[in-house]
Length: 133
Image (cartoon, rainbow, N blue to C red; front, side):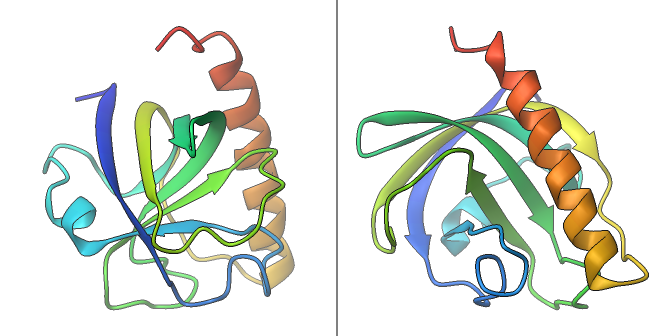
């Protein structure tokens, strides 16, 4: 099912990405989550995203964020090297190019932050040669 393309509105999430984890995310509206193919497993992915006509590499999570024991499935996108402000209410389109890892709970917040930093580096390298998509 990869590559998988989707588009949706950026909505407010739990407020942890930028504040607690140092990794701001664009949380996609429920229609994006509901329309994901069943074959797309929960986990962390990489790809490209378009926001306001600009293309970014992205790292993205799909799932319930086991570290926080969320009960609601979410799609959260981190736009690599995005330096703009909030983008709530804007349309974002994205292409999932590859899978990085399964979601899991970590022993500490620092371990989670370290894993996120590694995910972003994998995404940065993984999308370098995929800019044709």
